[in-house]
Length: 224
Image 1 (spheres, one colour):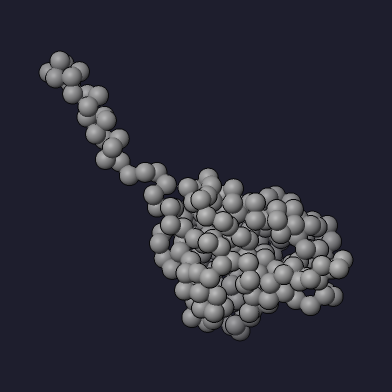
Image 2 (spheres, helix red, strand yellow; image 1 turned 30 degrees about the horizontal axis):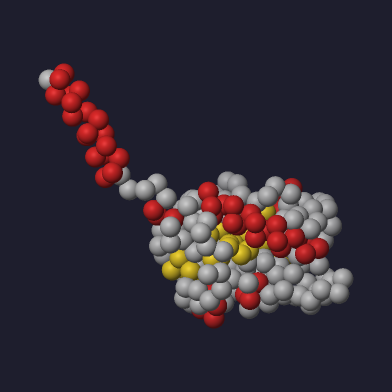
C-alpha cells in the first residue's frame, strides 16, 4: 500500500490541481464592484485619477485587472477645468458583479428606477456583501459627487470634497448601496445621490464619513 501511495500520490495531486478551478475564475467577467475599502484618507482620493487607480488595483488583486476600470465619480467645474459627469466615464455596459449578476444593461438602465442595484448585488471586488443599514458598522454611504442622473453638480456648494482632493474641507454627495434610508422618499434610498456627507469636521474626513454610515467607498465600473 505504501508503494502504491508513493507511486500514485504525486499523480493524484497533479490531477487534483488540474481539476481545481482557477482561484479567480469567478471574478474574470466582473465589470462592476463596490470597493471593499477606500484609500484611507476620507474624501481625498488623490483626485479622480487616484480613484481610478484604486479601482484598477482592487480589480487586479481580484483577477479582473485586464479591463480598464473607472470610478463612478463626478467632479465640479473649478480652476478653469470643466465638470466631469460620472455617467460619462464608465463605458456602455452591461455590468456584472463578481457573481455574474447584471446590475444594469446600459447607462440609461443604470440611472433608471429599474436597475438591479441592491445590497445583494452591489458586491465588493471580492464578491462580498457590504454592510448596510442595520449592520455594524454601517458602510452604505458611497461617494459619488453626482446627481441622480449621473451628472455633476453645478459649481458652488461643494459636493465632491474639492474634486476628491480634500479630507479636511467640503462635503461629498453620497448614495446608499443598500438603497435603504431613514425616510421613505426615493432620494433617501438612492444608490447614487442620497445626501451630502457631514460630520464634526465638515464632511470629508474619514471620521466624518464613518459618522453617517460610510467608509470612503465608491463604485467601480469596467469601461471596456
